[in-house]
Image (cartoon, one colour):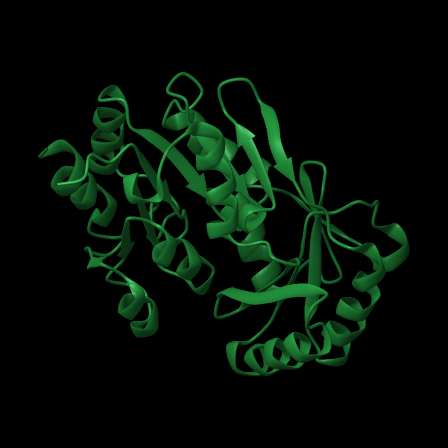
Length: 271
């Protein structure tokens, strides 16, 4: 059996339960894994600031852990706060995203410092993003001129069916210039070309001398699919859509049933 050296975890719908909390059982399993020398990596579409509290809770700073924020657009070493890699969004493409979102009747947001800047402060999906990240929202009525560049990503939010249509439209319009994919039914991630969790993981493990066969990656969303395929052991949560589960090597319990703890106990602690 492979001796795993790293476990990479998506946050929402994977590491955290539906209240966006790490349960005691899951935390205990991950603390045990780190005590055994396993590196924990938190990989999310969230901005770095929206991941830090969970990284602190799991004591990643003293255990050699990492944060992959913006779907891999920024890698931070928790032990010293050093940014190992960062890719910014081509700002010339932001007006196109903005106009497409507005024409589709949807809100668009980005991140400014420790806050969220959005075209619709009280949009239910914008408020959900604020809740997930524990970040305040500021209304930008003149979004394109108020945003301070560079930014790592934009997020377009809206009802799932029209958002899926917009995803297909933008994928065609921006093909070869930007990556566009959903991290949830109502969240459309607009990130620099070639940014996904697998590419960033590849970068990270190359610098650490870890092989992809030595990684476990757990996720539940479309933005997790690349790392589930990439990892030696790709794990999908029971709450993941069927096509995500079909790409995985193993399907664990849901995020409400300590699915991550189950993986750690079965594949790391039972060794």
